[in-house]
Image (cartoon, rainbow, N blue to C red; front, side, top):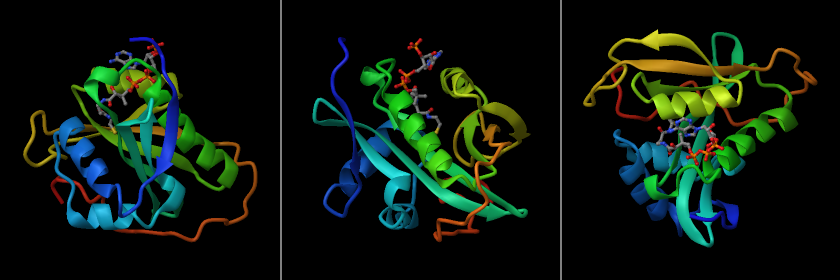
Length: 178
Ligand SMILES: CC(C)(COP(=O)(O)OP(=O)(O)OC[C@H]1O[C@@H](n2cnc3c(N)ncnc32)[C@H](O)[C@@H]1OP(=O)(O)O)[C@@H](O)C(=O)NCCC(=O)NCCS
């Protein structure tokens, strides 16, 4: 497939069903109503991705304030299988890293992946993410149930100003063991 036009778009109440459908197809875990309610409130932290005007991917993040750290958590970042290796994932991760850089006050950005998801691990490693932890039985109804935590740290924070006000201490709204 030749490369086409890749664009990011806002998630609104009018297209949130497209996000739900996409996540159902791309991810083995089910996301609950709270996940979708919250996504509508996070602004730039959640985006649909269009490839030649067709929805093919989406990224959803939230701010995580735990353990005296301010972190960005990538809840979902995925692309339809038939549109992979076209740099659609790259556009999404660059969007996330751009948010972190502009904000300048995140300690790190992190996510969970199933331990057998070699493609996603290679993908994130390309952007400087590292495996920092393995969580046994993280997922409830999928095999393997273990997850890696992939993280990219921002050691040289450009400034210390607090610019974002959205916070959440709740665990990820995904189908995992609590
Ligand atoms: C991970 C994922 C988002 C990557 O999206 P993508 O659009 O295919 O990625 P890109 O085309 O931007 O890939 C950029 C680079 O990452 C690396 N990469 C991506 N997928 C890879 C794979 N399956 N195996 C090895 N390297 C891979 C390559 O270096 C690639 O560059 P190249 O194609 O020029 O060689 C996609 O495979 C996906 O949606 N997977 C299912 C959902 C998921 O597991 N998400 C991660 C947990 S949130």
